[in-house]
Length: 121
Image 1: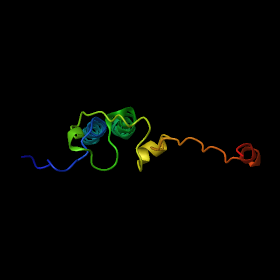
Image 2: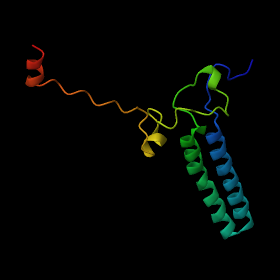
Image 3: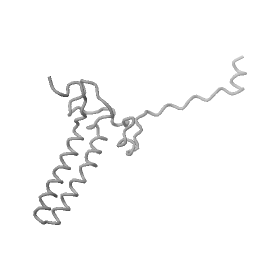
């Protein structure tokens, strides 16, 4: 029995990719700082900064997850989120992309006017 069996830790392809890119860039920047290479240092910081947009784009492509826990059968980190196209409710990343997470409701039918009421009689 694992430590996280009943809890959704949010491990996703988007999350892991963003963190891996940020760690790689930070490692390059750290080694470059110790070696005294300004160009490599700034390159490492630029690579680290790419991690957040990469994770965001993967989230929008369906490789992330909505806020809150997922159903037990969908907790594997490589499970694709099919609802991502419409957007997740209460998700800042989806709101920034213009996805509201709520399907547009059809326009209500207009109320019958006086002519419609008279024709029913």
